[in-house]
Amino acid sequence: MSKKKRKKPAAEQTPLGFPIPSGWKGEVTDFDPRATPGFDGKKADGKELLALRDNALDELQERLYAAHHGRADGRSVLLIVQGMDTSGKGGIMRHVVRNVDPQGVDITAFKAPTSAEKRHDFLWRIRRRTPAPGIIGVFDRSHYEDVLIHRVHGWADAKEIRDRCTAINAFERELTEAGTVIVKVMLHISAQEQGERLMERLDRQDKHWKYSPGDVDERLHWDDYMEAYTRALRATSTVGAPWTVVPADRKWYSRIAVQQLLLNALEGIDPQWPAAEFDVEEEKQRLRATMG
Amino acid sequence: MSKKKRKKPAAEQTPLGFPIPSGWKGEVTDFDPRATPGFDGKKADGKELLALRDNALDELQERLYAAHHGRADGRSVLLIVQGMDTSGKGGIMRHVVRNVDPQGVDITAFKAPTSAEKRHDFLWRIRRRTPAPGIIGVFDRSHYEDVLIHRVHGWADAKEIRDRCTAINAFERELTEAGTVIVKVMLHISAQEQGERLMERLDRQDKHWKYSPGDVDERLHWDDYMEAYTRALRATSTVGAPWTVVPADRKWYSRIAVQQLLLNALEGIDPQWPAAEFDVEEEKQRLRATMG
Image 1: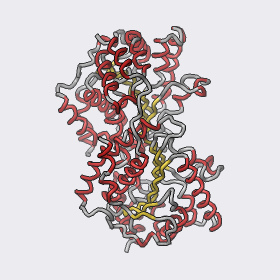
Image 2: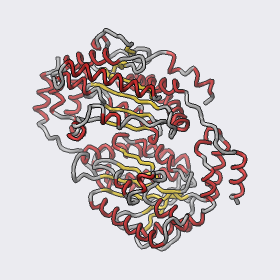
Image 3: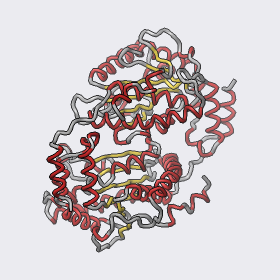
Image 4: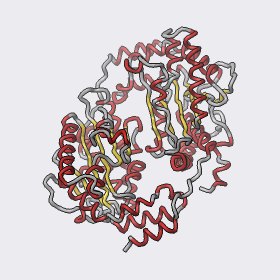
């Protein structure tokens, strides 16, 4: 792909999702989970677009790896995906992330912390999984659980939550200053849609393993979760590491939106194929000498 | 997919690649790197087959994860891919492995060991990367480097190489007894084909980063490497963890062959969707009560 072609990709023309500016004072419930901001096509168009952009994502990832891997000052991308149960985090991994070279991607699904992890600061296990130069790191849940579920269940008081948000902002600033582009996504589904997705898991024997009775327990705290998201986004959507609320009632839409956010992050880095660190003609001669 | 349909998949009908039996006395150079054993179609047919079987691989991986993840006695798969430079290891990762859920796959590309790794036994860093229950682990290069490049360059003497093979067999037996199905693949390319692939890397600016002058240095030891592979396969192709030599001059063929080996491994485990550990009807009622 020529440099010219990469300069004005379709992906940059209309932002998808709802970008959350620094200083935002809104509520996540202001956003319609069925909306498709920035895209006026239908499901089939969305699927087509996703497939079309796979190649661009693939090439940009390879360039990032080629240009930055192994460099002490190399750039990287960190995609943080948060959302309620069934909001489609797994689908993002399967339908967006898996379309790039698996060797250049480092996915971490953060579960409830282990007892070993609990003995450390909440960012300890997160720091261990931040992407190396040249790599796209992906967090399926993240340090944001410590200001979401912890707020909802009162496992941390208001001051502690504020302190954690401050620590998160400092941590993320550190990352961006070291060359990581952070993309933070809230997959925003409606309570109605979640109910239907959970019911499907209960209706299908091959989906039972994805269901746990705790899912309904958490669902009973829906409004508290929305409030916790609102507060987390207000406190941590910074200029350097802004959030995007991605409507997720339509899975196909959330996938093209996250794909575009990744494309934008990579295009911002604009990684170039590195110049050869050897004499190309000399190597061709050496190689020819080995061929029959 | 019904159980009946899974019982006799096309993949099991004709083995692809050259299976190496325990006690084998041959030479890897006996095998034609351009052959397509078990498959009489052409490139287009091979590509079609690869795409067709993606879904089967995807479902079997998900079943493996659902049934075995988190279980102390759970099953797993370990795919070990060895081969000369340019033999297509990366292509296996991109075109076979990446078509399953990335969260159920754990890929490790083993490079030259770090100084920290060198302070340990050669299997130390390998043990740390063996797949957890429910996971497909993939090694791009492996502990076999310690009996291949080490033999070629004389970094270990004959006795040490023999001892390492003994240690490898014991280690792999341990893994298989703990429930891991080990699939060992030698991607077998010809010196001529490697020469052409290296030349392509030199001809294209976007491929220069994949080339290193050391590639030609290693190429000069071609016959020694073939001998080292022969000896390694003779010593470590066991009943529990056999090798398959996969002709790799035709990339499309090597991909369908490795895909089939993975399918066979998973079909051997035959993972079933786990039964619900909760009362499905009761959960449906609880869920319905939360819906408007």
